[in-house]
Structures are given as C-alpha cells and as structure tokens.
Image (cartoon, rainbow, N blue to C red):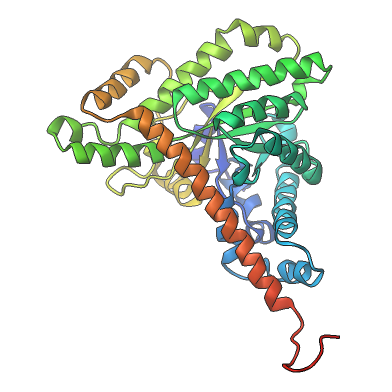
Length: 381
C-alpha cells in the first residue's frame, strides 16, 4: 500500500503520527493496520472516554462482556480485562514500528484509573500492575500531570516503566513533568536499570486551551480580546517546545543521563481535533510541526490532513518570543491563564473519571443481562 503524501511529509519533518483512538472493531477489521500502511500511523493513544465510546457502541464487545459476566467477574476486573486485551493486541500490531524505530514509536498508551489521579501510591501500584498485565515492551502507561501524579511519574519510571504524562495544559506543568521524568531516570540508574529501555512523552493538550480561552475572551468582549481568539493554544504549545529544548537539548542534567543511554521525553500534541468550526480543521497539526515531537490525531482530523494538509517545514523552533507575546496579550486583556490551566486540569480528570464510571455501568448492565432468569416464585438452584 502507498502512504499518503501529506502525512508522509509530516513524518519526514520529525512528527510521529499516532492515532487517538482504539476499538475492538479497528483491530479485528484490519483498520488499524490499514492506517499504519496508508496514513503513516506509528502509535496509538487511548483514554477512558475512547473506551467508553467503543464499548457502548456496536456489538464487538458483547461476546466478551457476556462471557465475563457469566463467570461472575466484578466490574473493575472485567473492564480492566477488556481494555488490556485491546491494548495488548494493538501493541502486537505496532510491534514492527517499535522495532524499526528502536523503541521510539510503535507505542500504545493505556491510562491508569483516573479516579486515582490524586493518589500517588495507588497510581504507581496500578501502573506496575498494568505493565505486567499487558506485558509488552512497546506499552506506555498514562499518568495524569496532577501534583500527585508527578511523584507517581518519578516512581514509575524508576521501576523501568515507560510513561506517557497526560493532561498537561500549562508550560509550568510541562516543566514539572520533565523534571519528574529525569528524577525517575536518575533513580532507575541508581537501581542499575537499563535506561535505554525507558521512554516517555509529555502530552500537552492543545484545542481545549483555545476553547476555554476563547470563551473568556468573548466574555471580555473588546476588539483587542476578540483579535486574540484561536492563538493561545498554539502559543502555549510552542513555549512548551522551547522548554523541552532547554531541558533536553541544552540541559546538563539530561546530558549526564544520555551517556547511559537515556532518551528524551518527547513533547506530544494531544487534543488536536479542532473544536471551533470557524478554524481550519488541520491548524493544530500544521502550526505544531517540529523535530522529535508526536501528534496524536483523531481519525476525522487525520483524514482531513491526508486530504488537504500542507506543511512548510518546522513551524515551532524559534517562535518562543512571539508565543510569549501572545500569552502576555491574552493576560493583558483580562484572562487569568493560571486559572484556565487549573480549571482544564481539574475538568480533564473529572471527565475521564466520569467516562470510567460509565464504563463500569455498561459492564454492570451487561452482567445483569447475562444472569440466568429465575421465574418468580421459584428457587434459584
């Protein structure tokens, strides 16, 4: 099969294309393999919302749901089984990309229970458990970038486990995520672990920033405020990339670890689907082209870029000054960016926790339906 030229160009510019979706249908139909063969896809990200949608739509999971219910599996273990089965299968599909890239790509991410986002020890325990259950070297464990999550990231990396730091909204959180990763590598080194086997990405959410900042700019209502709509998210991401360069390309702390085989923690652009129909549907792809980055892309945005995406090379390096000026202007018109980022982090954790609860409810409903029916008045033998 032939790769799409637009997505091939994106990959050639240093951006790894990862699909932001996974389902049993994608795996059994061969769709994931087709996207690898024709859309330059070299990774997959998942989250509770993605699985909630996958399990709640269609019948692909019905046989396994029924079988688990008939065995009497509890809600938590059943959902964990379903999700880890899909992730393990996706890891196997992407194994050739993992091998070809020396472990950099070919990765599949699985998230810890979002209800544990503020519990460091429980997050680490589940990260270790998921790593063992999936049992694939090309797995990423996703840990939210909450304050508690930072210590969990360090402890998980120290165990030799590769981590996708998720739900990053601010440059400050990004800096903390990089520091947590480096601390984990240092602990792993002291424990005698092979640093070359540990990888990480830092997932900075993009479009959600514009959605909230634009809403607040509209509330301000001035011409100066309205002129800034659709600029904050890209500026924020570009500043995050500058922070990455400072830590991993110019920083002495990472340089010392690199001699032992340590890898950089690549910036990953998440939430790249455009929420505002007034904006170009590929803007969060074309505006964030930079070496050694990842873009996780929902399928509709992936297809839009395949159809009419155009890049002109690196669109990020050297833009930090302008990006800072944009955020300064947003603050100057009255938008409290620190409050925006805190709200988005809390909201992101809450949404994933809600989706997790809906996953458990969906299984509970299936389990009840699978129970043998006992006519009224007759003993259940």
